[in-house]
Length: 164
Image (tube, rainbow, N blue to C red; front, side, top):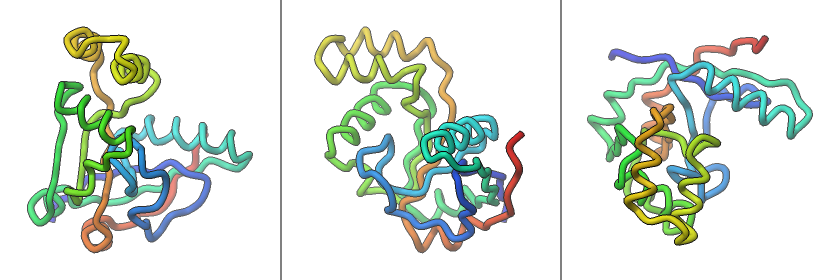
C-alpha cells in the first residue's frame, strides 16, 4: 500500500473521521474533506478557529488514494473545467451529484474562483466567459471521502501538527 500524507484543518482532533457529516451543499457533497496541501489545511484551520474562538488543529493522515480509486467509485477533476463547474453548481443547488461516488478529488471553489462560480450560477456570466476566467487559476486540491467503509480502511490517523 503506497500512501500519501493528507491534512484536515479543524479545531479538534479527529482520529476517526465520519463521512456524511456537515453541510450537504459543499463543493463535493457531504463528506470528510482532506487535502495534500498542508498550507491549505492550515488556512482552513485558522479560519474555522477564528469563527469558533478555539485553537486551530492540523490533523494528519496517511491516505491510500489508490485503494479508494481502485475499489470505489472515484471522480477526479484535474482542472477548473466545464465538468468541474457543472458539478460544483449541482452541489450548491442541492442536486447531490456526489451520491454516485465514494471519493472525489479536485479544486476548491474558494475565494479565488467563487465569484466566477456565483456569477455563472446567477446567469450573469456565460459558460464560455466563466471557463475562460477559471482557466486563469491553478486549482488547489481537496479530497472528499464519502464512503465510511473505505474511509475506515484507507485513511489512517497519523497525529496532529501544531499551527504556528
